[in-house]
Image 1 (cartoon, protein in one colour):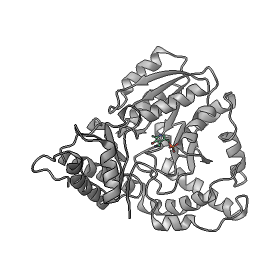
Image 2 (cartoon, rainbow, N blue to C red; image 1 turned 180 degrees about the horizontal axis):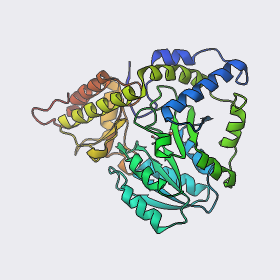
Image 3 (tube, protein in one colour; image 1 turned 180 degrees about the vertical axis):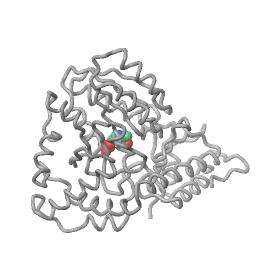
Image 4 (cartoon, rainbow, N blue to C red; image 1 turned 90 degrees about the horizontal axis):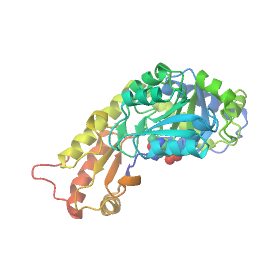
Length: 369
Ligand code: PMP
């Protein structure tokens, strides 16, 4: 089977695929209603929240858009903390809907400094919300979200979090950290195909919702709430993805949150150690290296495209390229969701074989394992 080592869509195990292949049912019928309620309740455990949780028919970007349009009004001032391409995307979404965005950018490969967030908030008391990425998939860095949240929670600002590539894989405590709007997506740590954004909405976010004036329709969480009270979604949901998620959550629950977090940490470390053993350099500041995705600097003289094509064509292994300004400068190894040690060992073995074929001499004594 192909070793799909991109940070989403992640591999979907055969039994989850099979669960998604059930015949179609009435999305407004009793059976689907039961599944929807069960999935929503189960997700609260993974979000570690008592807040409302909703399924939106969208990819993660739609969930980010939902965070913005349901809580803000045009002209509102927001602080976007960006450490890479997805932080920039959050800022672009807020701008597209007319927010006045202050960008607090950190160098790609580093994490955000909570003290800088504190200073930026102190410098502009009119800021209404802080938008931040938990795990920056484009650089392989996990922000110290607990510390950033602590700073934001010293104020009454909203905290909107892109947890697309972390929730369900890395420690995430919606209620303890005071996250007002958290967003994840089915194709990441959940072992499920793309098609669903899953979001949580706090009371503070509902209070903001009542006053928010940005245009919204499909992603209106008020409508999602009304319909969920009738065990439905406002619009047709991706029924097959919901079947798959229902089944996958059962397995993830059996594994248990702490074990899931430990598995991702172990595999993250295995990946970083293996990459360094090949003599390669990580992009991320290692103190904040992500346990769901590793970004690797491409050695001098090697083309990312040549490496990715070779490993795909001859070793049935798929790596991700770089994004934005890191296109052609890094490649990325995804390790979230359905991933085990063997998948990573195999990927490292493939790199050890393929890199010399695209112009990189592995330093003597190094092996990748
Ligand atoms: N944020 C992060 C951190 C992501 O990793 C991604 C997907 N790679 C997104 C947002 C966007 O999600 P989607 O592609 O599902 O719209």
